[in-house]
Amino acid sequence: MPDLPPGRRPLSPGSRAGLGAAVVLLAIVSAVELSDGRKADFVGLLAAVPFLAAVFAFWPAVLAAGVLAAIVGMVFVGMAGPLTVSGGVNIVGILLATGIAIAVAMLRERQADKIAELQRLAAVAQQAVLRPLGPQVGALAVAGRYISATAAADIGGDLYEALDTPYGVRIIIGDVRGKGLDAVRLASIVLGSYRHVAYERADLKSMVTDLDRAVARSVGDEDFVTAALVEERGGTLTIVNCGHPAPLLLRRGKVIPLEPPSPAPPLGFMPEVKPRVERLEPGDRLLLFTDGLGEARRDGEFFPTADRAWRLLGHGTVGDGLASLETALVDWVHGRLEDDIALVLLEYAGPDDGATVPMPSWEVGAAGS
Image 1: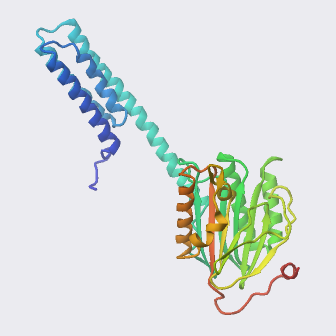
Image 2 (image 1 turned 120 degrees about the vertical axis):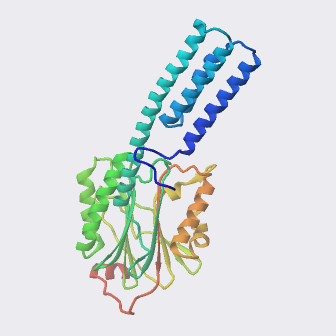
């Protein structure tokens, strides 16, 4: 597209549509006037032309439509004979309508510019809160996906992150109670704390304690965050779950829910977590998700995540798998989601050098229990 002079905008599809509708209306009124003979009974209708253009078009296009309507009106008034009071009033009315329509178009443009700026700021905020994952973090291939239930918003209270730390690859997925800006704010607090403690704490229990304190300092008594923390260390997978849906392990065509040894409340309610430890095999995949996936339904029937997980997620890259899951999910609910959904899919390729990193004593005890 060629560069435009400063201050000029390209003619958008909306502007073209507005001008097209205005021209059609101008043609209809002109045809009616011509069929009515030399009278000028319908010239006043031309005042609607600039208003119609103002619905979509920029103000210069509205001005052009208004001027054209005024010229056509003057032609019909002139054809009707000597200028009359009603004819003059009609022409003045068209010009006045053009001025008002220009003011309306300019106000709409300013509002559109503000909305566009807010959308740009929201995109920056989304990148700061939910940074892109993968494609490779340590020994794991990683992909993340956020599916918003609101077309105008790209982010809500769901969160995820994957980090390669001195203690192994660590992943979090969580869901903030509530919606709107408060949920986004709390999600950013949790992620900010997680990005710090993931590098500082040697075990997941300590991380949960720190995150719980961060949530408790930032919310009311009834607010909380469900979360699952995952650590891959030398082929050993450790999961702690704070009131969150259990991850699904995809292994050789089977789908295994990794339920915690005992339930724990969400962050904000001082959870006492017990880890679940699994030994990974090369090719294993792990799906982490928020409860929007489990609650997606049509005609009262929930989306069969476990039944379809291997067929949708077990082939291609992890990014391909999440794309297939999203397509199937949106088709299932006919495009109408009731809640945001965060998805993270991991694939274990095997240890880089065959060496294993020893587990802390609390994880060894959990694995043997």
